[in-house]
Length: 172
View 1 (cartoon, one colour):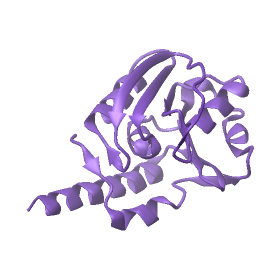
View 2 (tube, helix red, strand yellow):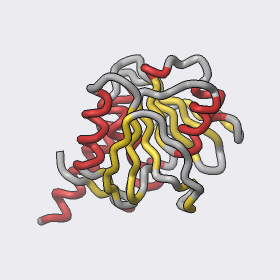
View 3 (spheres, one colour):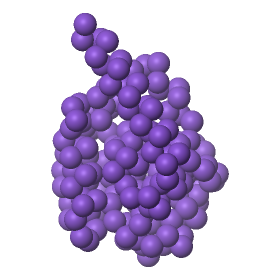
């Protein structure tokens, strides 16, 4: 794996939910309710805090202390914390490796991103086990619940392939 940049042409595609959209301000809390922590992955500060407020400790959380690109007050992270750099519009090898390692280890893990966590949903879906759930925020709409299955992995794999192809084309 190498660093991948999201091309401008794919941005509108990724604005569409990768799973089931749960509308409303309390959607993240509703999305995590009933999902065992060891099967839950959350991306984003709102989703992570909603899980903690619901009494669920996710297997993995990816956060950046930002909501809608605005800094928020730092709060207590629960679990083993790893810091990675990931610029906006990128999926870095460092981020991907941290997701892979965290999901392969026991206990709860938090990846604290310096930069932006938005695209972390891509490696999270690919690295998750079938039957896991990935929850992330959909700005101004609610939360998205991705039930990890073949369809979810294929959808994300297609995006990653387009990112990789675009990157290779740009290098020529």
